[in-house]
Length: 234
Image (cartoon, rainbow, N blue to C red; front, top):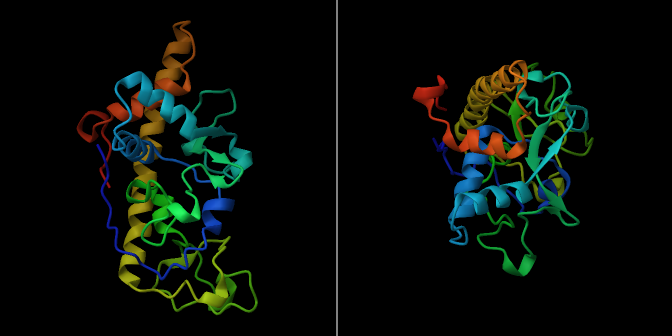
């Protein structure tokens, strides 16, 4: 099941690519599905093993504490004793899917832009769990005047956008809120899917079977169907 989400831009992006260079992007099972579709669309993959190899090169596994996700155990895949979380791989330039400036199309530098993770789609917006007293507190820069945001919407706690180019001008407030809501719904579905996979790991351990590896998780992601797994499709 490949989740589809609105591609309409919710804010005016300056295409500074700082988010692509500095942020680590955790992946949901649905992000991995979209990534697989992006890789296959290039026409270079001929079989399942090649797809798994490409996914392995595109994904890095991090400890929860490396991502500041110690308080979100529902996202931990128990491939290791203390859990691990899949993220987009990086190289010396940042995200491995960040292309050179001369190769960029449509003002962005992402080679999988149409199938990018939902966290990338929703950035720089986030869910407003505790409404701030003033817009300025939404952004660490004292010189930044955050836009008036609709109820339920805030800014990412680490906004990297260059404020002098006013990239956070909201073009479509409802679209921005809708994308964040869809991201949260997908995160809830991801928690259910990860829990199902972790249960398989526990069952195999009780039977004395060998531990599952990352490739098994990728195969699990690619085989998911909402009807079969009880997942609410975003």
